[in-house]
Length: 245
Length: 245
DNA sequence: CATTATTTGTCCGTATGTATT
DNA sequence: TAATACATACGGACAAATAAT
Image (cartoon, rainbow over all chains, first blue to last red; front, side, top):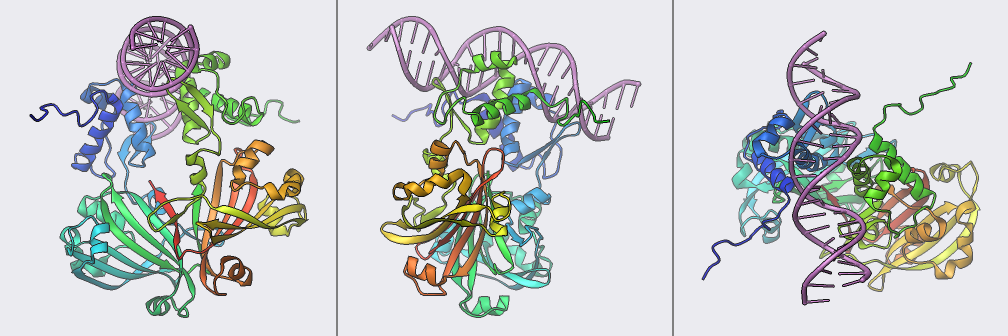
């Protein structure tokens, strides 16, 4: 006989965690859009029937996850991917003086094709699903620095192909604004490899030159994979900066 | 006439920040040693003449910085560098199944010499200070993977040379236990480079093979530089894993 | 094995300070 | 100036985990 009341979540889960989940759900469901202001803490506390302190603790967590921005005297806002913080949170190349500059992108190729089993698996799609592949070269200070391949679900992002000419430099912002998909975290594997013929041509270097390969899976707020991105970078004048604290 | 009451810190600095600084000072001054238990929150609140809530907020910050570990029912403890979390917080190489394994180290050379101006500068030392240089090869699964050079202030860490035979794999733990110096953060610059003759011999690869160079400055709790470390890694069977969240 | 004391975790309500509009 | 919103601070109550009795 099946359990009619399966305790899938512990019944004694802390209130502030429940509140946090409710706020997350509301964000996901589009109740508030990126950049929009939330109701005041007082109002939210009343709405969720908790004290201000409990509500603050829920918001504290979301602020720590960079999903909400608080500003004293103004209000709390849904974070967007067009702030400096968010832009550079996912972009780590700096020059020798540790200066960051967002690269300009040139789309080389954009097409749909069947994904390999590995690719589909990494994107959380069924085997041999159709995927969208974007290849672009990213320039800093006029010089090509990154040879990049981006893979997406064609089902979800298929109409991106029609506007390949107007693709912005900051794709995560596009996903958020046009596809209601917020990239909240990512996992990267970084290797040193030799430039292949394509890299050599794109980056204006010799075949075999050591380059940095960054292989990243970007995840949404539910930690479902959204995008696979392989960035192959010259690191003679730039480096990948990582701050551990 | 000099200002007798220079407001070096804003007078209206939040209480919990002041408390946090006092606790930090106490840790630095050795009032509690790594692994030791702090007094209870009640006691600390009384000692600092603040409410429990204010003290909790101060500790919250220190927990977020991984300097204090809280355990419900037991107490709060000064964090040590011998926990899995701390060990792998500063070690990022994983195999193709994303498994982590701490490498075994073999010291190749250890000596003192005058530092170059760049080296002294990065270590926060006066020009042409004497520095301690440790060169070692780190093996995973019996194979050499990392060719590493470690630079330290010879004034502070000079007697390390006498015990080069018994150097542990985890130097940060040694700094903490034997030199009362806790590494709290680090800044890394990562590049792809070609193996030089020394790398080739140490890592059993051809000269010119692409390898990953991780150039790290480790900082103490006051963000003063403690150690400069250059790790040159094979990434054919391993990769640098970075999780952004 | 049950009880009790200790410690952190959660939650509440209120008051006051500070930044913004 | 006044209203609004978040930030800080206080103190108390109960829950949950742990360790000792």
